[in-house]
Amino acid sequence: MVFYFNVANWSAWADGLETQADWQQWQAGEKQLADELNLPALKSVPPMQRRRLSPFAKVTLHCALEAAGDDASHVPSVFASRHGDLHKTTALIEAVAKKEDLSPTQFGLSVHNALAGLFSIFTQNTAPISAVAAGESTFIAGLVDSLVKMQINQYAKILYVYSDLKVPTCYQNYVAENEKNIAIALLLEASPMEQAQFSLAQTKLSQSEHTLELNGPQAFSFIQFLCSNQPALIQAIQQQTWVFNRANG
Image 1 (cartoon, rainbow, N blue to C red):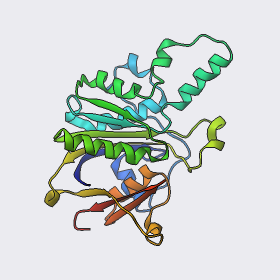
Image 2 (cartoon, one colour; image 1 turned 60 degrees about the vertical axis):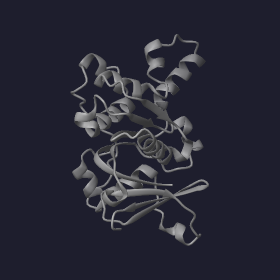
Image 3 (spheres, rainbow, N blue to C red; image 1 turned 30 degrees about the vertical axis):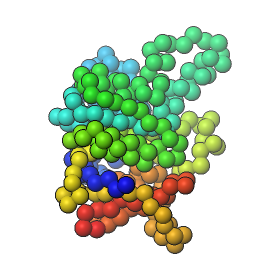
C-alpha cells in the first residue's frame, strides 16, 4: 500500500532548534544542536496547569499546539513516544523503592497517553486520539498509524505528534541508538496521488540500496528530508524498510 499526503504545517523542538527557520539552517549545516534543551513558554496553557508539566510534556504540547493551529479544537490526532515521560516514571519507581507515598497527579501524568489527554483538555478537542509506542520503530509506526486512520476514516487532516527525551542516566546502557531530545508535530493532510507532496510505502531493497538510509534517529532523518529537496528517504527499521518519496522526486 502507498500512502499519499501533504504536510499542511509542522513544528519541531530540540536542543537549540526551536523554529522552522532553525531547522532549515540545521539541515543546511549552518546551525548545530545546542548542549541543552530550552523549554518553550507555552503561554497558551493556563499558568496553574503549565506549572505541573514536565519538560517532556512542555515540548510535546508546544509542538502539537503550534502545528495544529486553528485545527486544534477538532483535528483527530496520534501521539507517539518510545519511552514516554521516562524521567517522571523513574522518579515514581525510585519513590516506590524508598517506600514513599506516590502523588496521584504525578502518576496520572506519567502514563503513555497522558499527553494525548492533556491536549484534548487544553483544546476542548473531542475527536479521536490514540497513543503509540513501538520500540525503535515508534516514529514510523505512529506516522503509518496516522496515515491509515486518515485514509480509512476519510479525515481531511490528522495531527501526528512524536516526542522523546534522552533517557535518564540509569537507562543509558540499555539504549542502542544515539538518542537526542526531540519533539515533532505534523499536521497531515489527505491528498490524491497527483496532488500529493509526499508518498510513503513499504518496500524491499537490496543491501547496496540500504546505504541510502540516513543515519541517526528517525525523527531527525525525517525533518532533514522535510527541510531539503532530497527526492527520497529510506528508513530501514528492524525487519521493515519504508521509503518516503517527494512529488516529482
